[in-house]
Length: 255
Image (cartoon, rainbow, N blue to C red; front, side):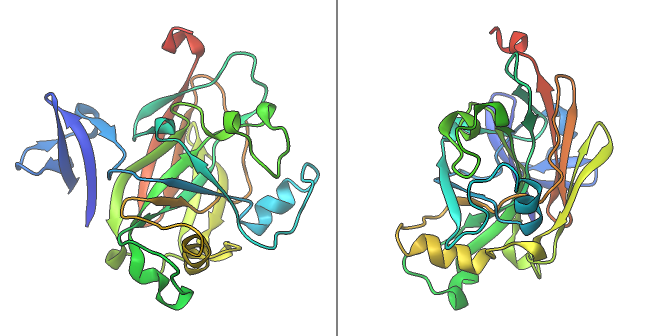
């Protein structure tokens, strides 16, 4: 099942996918543009992975201080960074290079501590699409993303749907792509993850407790390009969803 959370009529509703858009739990059917889309589940800790596709590491090889890893490169993100489907992301004035990152987001469904990779998939509730923007101007060191690059308000788009794990036969065989103004600029497949989902859950749960609602952003493949004010950015993952976002200027946010 594909489920969402939206704001409509002064309240927050749970909804599911419908041929005409979405259907609220009370039975009302609405178009996508009639609601405000929220992240499709109540998000706990946000754990993001950097450099988790070999082709993306190669793409950035001239900028990296380290090109191989003994363990996954993981970092945390703030809840204020999250926005939903069809929302706007601000591009700060005078920024030279701001890019999207299409990522498969893994949602934890059970408390996980010291989980072995052979059992790790039992702890996955489902999946959604993430678009995790970065501003390369702000990087102190590309191998270690700093707070201003990855924790800006409204910089991480999540949704539109939470897809049950049971409805995704193989999360390691999903094609993903990004389109900017209708043109495909990024393509990849989750089969090319350096650290796959069981490996990530084993690694993370070895030193921190994962709780229901925590989300793991598994990284992006190569093909990141600069985006500008007015651009519509669509990140898609086959079987998971199509996530739409628009880039706006400082003036939209009265800055």
